[in-house]
Amino acid sequence: FGYLVKPFAHDKDAIQALVLFAEVAAYYKSQGKTFADGLEELFEKFGYFEEKTISLDFPGIHGNDEMGAIISQFRDKQPDTIGGLKVIRPQDFSKSIETTVNGKITTLPQPKANVLKYWLEDGSWVAIRPSGT
Image (cartoon, rainbow, N blue to C red; front, side, top):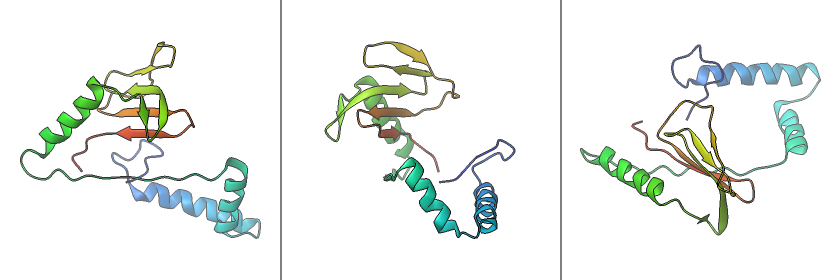
């Protein structure tokens, strides 16, 4: 995983995250606080969250075909629920579209990519994307 805060780097690169981390740490140090103090302030202001990444490996000559078949299945038959929560806004980045609960279709501003993202009724989301990395 990586961070691409500004497009001057051609790939997600930890150097951008490191520079931002140093800037935030210096800011809190100037206030007599630690980075952990600042992080706690952010949690108090914006709340806590949980994130989980599940990476599946598809090795071998047919790995890319297997990943493509799985995402095609999700694209062809979108789930109504995930983990017991209702899907309220499916997004298909390959078509640059989002569908709302009432069926309204809007255009996504992001570049096209082979990604599906499902926003759930509690505000959480699940994304599916095949990757060669």
